[in-house]
Length: 612
Image (tube, rainbow, N blue to C red; front, side, top):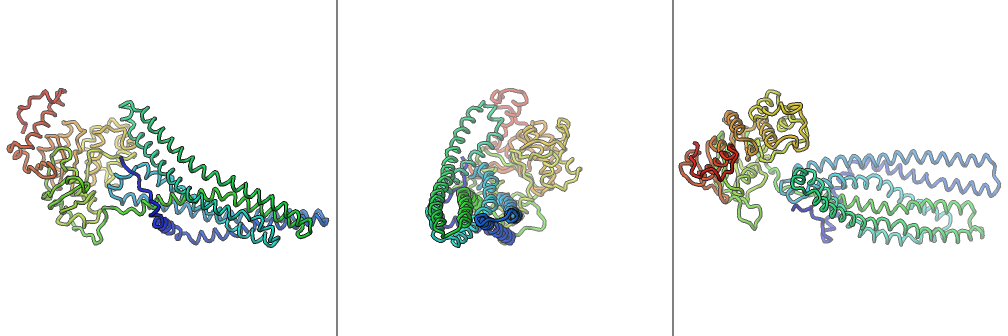
């Protein structure tokens, strides 16, 4: 089973924090001017929000001394004016910060996708699709919230707390020290929560990736699930993973929810002490009633800000953990990458050579390809034959640099493929896999996927050669029919022919057919091969095939066994040799005859003559 990307251990934490900071700073510095301007406005708004308590103080003292109705109206108008000014300034400041966070989210999402495009196949084999989707969606959203709303509130809390305490000190130093006596306790609580919340949120996000992967597999594999009546089994499996998600989420929620009640309790005690000692100060004439009210209004503002620290700390930890998960992808180095000094021929002929190539999928297993030497001349057609695991697809993967050999070299036109720019190498190879991959767009767009500038005539020719034209009448809008996710509305044979048409439209010097007609009936396959003969005449073609018609059409047939070439020759030469190829060919011939007759292949006599 594919594994999630590893979460760093505590011993790696210092390096991990540096990685997160470096990636985050790389995005933040693009918008530092907007952030500075936005935070400056928020600072002004915070100071403006501390002016109403002063107005309230003056109003109450004026009442105590006997004021006029006009004075009260003036105080009220000033309060309304301050509220309007503060709201306007805060709106603009928050917009600058939050819109910058949106821009960072946009750029980070683009960078993630580009990184996915760069990473090699091995990365995706060891990663869960759902986990990668979670990082590119859910984690990215938490980072955006951290850089936007959380940043706004954190800055406001810092400014309000600093300025508010300074203002309280101007009223009564002793009363201020009593009011903020609980702050050291709050600091300790934050430190305690920080150590647990990030780890728990990381666990939540990891499980969210598992759930996303499970849903993605269930949806994409719904046909198999229904065919084997496994709906209830999948529901039970999902229920177990969903329960684990709930358990982890509740563990995080306990930490996040516990902060607010503790804050209310601590600030409540502080407020009670302020009322007691502040009341005595008023009685003793140390401060006026207006100052006492001003002190309590400011204290209430600070209390409301500090009470929001629970949400800020939780969001901070969520954003920090999510940034770490995103950084893990951005820090991943592809095993297959462009060379430092790339080189490629100006004109690609398609001459291919495997020079003493050895390939292992892991160090502790026997090689899939063992010191193989092979030269395929430009313009020739070669068929690869062998049992499952004999190394046929591995050879193709090495040609396209989906993997690199541990020993030896693969050369195209005399240049090691490791020296080619990846884009140029792969752009020279038209690849038609056994499992066709189509996109949820129109059939025309899928056929033109490799060459979006292809003309209608070129598309029509490719559709005709692949015999996809035979099925266009069955489709509601012909080539303009939207075929659904992964081409689900098409049959297996139709998908394969659409993928073949895509490679033909690309018109590349090297064509690779990896058992690309396995879902096509024998008669249609013979028609396709007949049409392909003219197309393949001027390009190098490698076929992994089992059907007799495909094998007989090749200029040269190679038989692989145990990662080595055991037979090499033309179709007729290998039949006359009466070795491995002859046995494979006769067996496949019996299978095809049985398919045509609708009987069991075992019922076809083994001594049946071979059709040459």
